[in-house]
Length: 134
Image 1 (cartoon, helix red, strand yellow):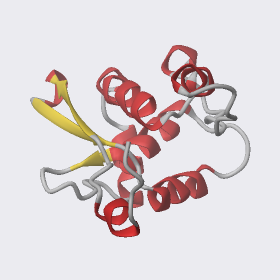
Image 2 (cartoon, one colour):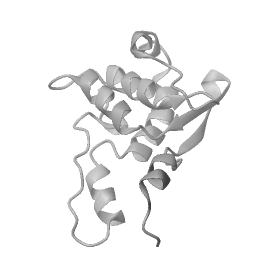
Image 3 (cartoon, helix red, strand yellow):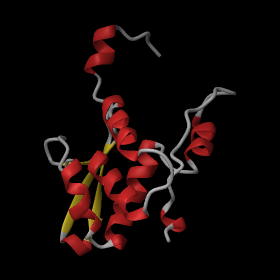
Image 4 (cartoon, helix red, strand yellow):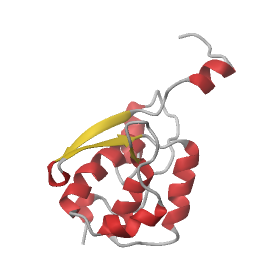
C-alpha cells in the first residue's frame, strides 16, 4: 500500500454509510460512522453511570443517522421525541449504528479480530446492548 500524504488523508471519504429499512417508519434510514468530533459529542452526552436504554438508543441515533446529504438528521433536542418512537424500530437502526461505530460490549472483541497482531484496541461503550434492555 502507498504511504499517504496529508492531503490524501484529509480528502479521503472515510465515513461509511449504510441504509436500514424501517418498515414501522415507512422507509429507509441512513446510518453513518461518526467522525472523531461527533464521537466526542456523543460521549459528552452520556454523562456518568448507567442511563435508561431508550435514552441511550435515541442518543446513538442522534449521533449516527444522516440525511441524503450526509449531514446529521437529528440534534440533541430530538432525543426526547425519539424516545417516544417504537423501540423495535429504534433497535433495528441501533444494531447497525453500534456495529458500524464499534460501540457496545462486543466492540473490543470485534476490533481484536479485525486488527493485525497484538495491537490494543479502543474501549467500547459500557451502555446496554439491545439484548440487555430492561
